[in-house]
Image (cartoon, rainbow, N blue to C red; front, side, top):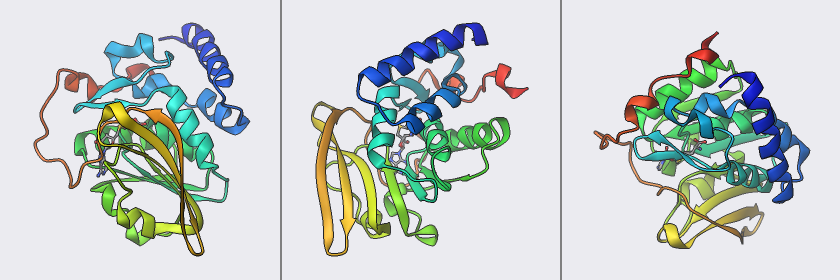
Length: 236
Ligand code: SAH
């Protein structure tokens, strides 16, 4: 996609997000600045600015822009904060967060996805306040804890992983989708107070499941070939 096709599509998407309740100008600004097309496999380039989730390989998806925007807005990120993301996937949500806070740490259990995202974020887009690693995000990142904010982008079945609750700073906020299956998942905001955790239900969502352990020999799906090919136009 060239810049003449991107600009009007991007404006249309931003207008849709505003109408759908995204009022935080910093969040809208981050969405405007980060090129979503760079995170999308070549065969889905035309849909880069549609408000929909798209496949990124390994059976995983880049989330719908409205969900990314809503989760980011509800996280209430400040520019001095240290943020942990679970489920790097394409790296798009991590890139959005990197514009709003001091430092982002992001963990992905699929190594090939992690490697592609790492290359795109650090070498192509040159985002330097972001560190990624392959691993089981359900264990968090103890060496870097506590975190002011935690965003989980895969759905837990019934409760947030204990390690993530422990690694959330007092006064900190975690956004996490939870539910037994895709048909009955909700986004929750968990706030850690001095004396315990407060949990609020936000909106209905559909996420891939949060799974334990690093992925080994994951089944290959047909979009996998596309997954490792970076959009060449952005390499310059
Ligand atoms: N934030 C991503 C969305 C990715 S979809 C983006 O902006 O593109 C959710 C991702 O969570 C998948 O890539 C999946 O592999 C990953 N995931 C699921 N369980 C995980 C775990 N325990 N640790 C780390 N990543 C996990």
